[in-house]
Amino acid sequence: MKKILSLLVLSCWCLASLAQNNTKPYVVMVSFDGFRYDYINKYPVKHIKKFIKKGAAAEVMYPSYPSKTFPNHYTLVTGLYPDHHGLIDNTFYDQGRDTFYSIRQRDKVEDSYYYGGLPIWQLVQQNGMKAASYFWVGSEAKIAGEYPSYYHRFDDKVPHPTRVQAVFDWLNLPEAERPHLMTIYFSMVDTQGHEYGPNSPETRAAVMEADSLVGMLMNGLKKIKLPVNVILTADHGMYEMQNRPETFIIADNFLEGLHKEDFLFVNNSTHGNIFLKNKAKEDEIYNAIVAKQNHFKIYKKADIPESLHFNTNARIGDMLLVVEPGYGFYNKESLAKKPEKRKVWGVHGFDPNVTPEMGAIFYANGPNIKKGVKIAPFQNIHVYPFVAQLLGISTPPIDGDPKVLEGIIKK
Image 1 (tube, rainbow, N blue to C red):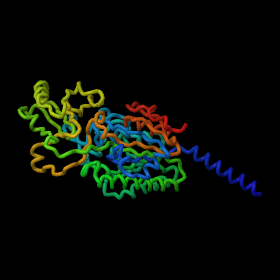
Image 2 (image 1 turned 60 degrees about the vertical axis):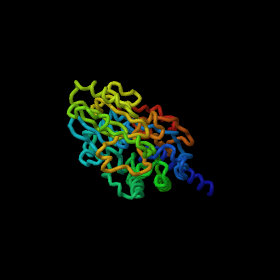
Image 3 (image 1 turned 90 degrees about the vertical axis):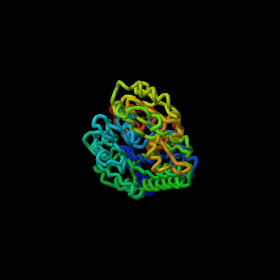
């Protein structure tokens, strides 16, 4: 009798296991904004280290240029460089509408006009599955005719545990209503990194909070008997700025003597765009600024280095000014009204090819991920095809290459 019962138990276990193996996987992608690649070595993040030990981890994931929040969050979910998906900065000038896009303008953030490419949630839905987002760049706009199946308008006051609980709630929905892709976003590491710098006690506390949220997420998923793969990532790292006189490059000084009616200068702190209103003045303006270059370089659009992948979109200026790490463009009047009194603070946006501090994290863990794998440094354009592979779907033409991360997927 005991032998028969044992066989029945084994049979039931095998059937349950087979059913789970035949279930299409689920993916939860978590972004901790501004989580620099080396924070796990700087701070005692026990939950994240446990996560890495049981999964795969990149030495560093390079953001796309410019290493800003909106361009890179959207690159992660489209597999396209900002130059190709069109969300080229947190704030930019759009010649098509003769207006500015800003992350603080609700009407612009929700306008699909500004977003190119096919977001991963829309790709998932086009393949017969549902997708959900608890805050992600682009998720509040009706891109390619649809929103994510479930989404929330951004409100950073929503408690962090509430966002994690949403993942459990989605996974506990009936199968037909259950999303196979879920994205969630947290800003605290970036916020504290900006205000106090990447080496501050405040940033450490934010990193430790992120670690506790990872613990909450992974412990909760143990109770949900579904094949859930989790990705921990970020949009960029953080550079510690020092309050020195030379840190502040006053744009008024290198633009002095030029006629303002001939061009528009868009200041993005770590870089700037010049849009010509009078094309005949291009060489005059370029040469005048070249003569005053100091801790920055100016490029005509055709000469922007290929390594930046940032030289074709109409939202990029006729000239691009790229600042060296540790410096920034400032406006004389604004700086006079609000002098910088902090000794140190944090900035991102610099060229990731020459600024290691811009590096971000990428860790993956789950039933479809190989255990204990170290991933060589890679570009964030490759995350999109990786997620698609996990879900068994094909991508449209993109910049990302599925071969880059396919080695960490169990076959």
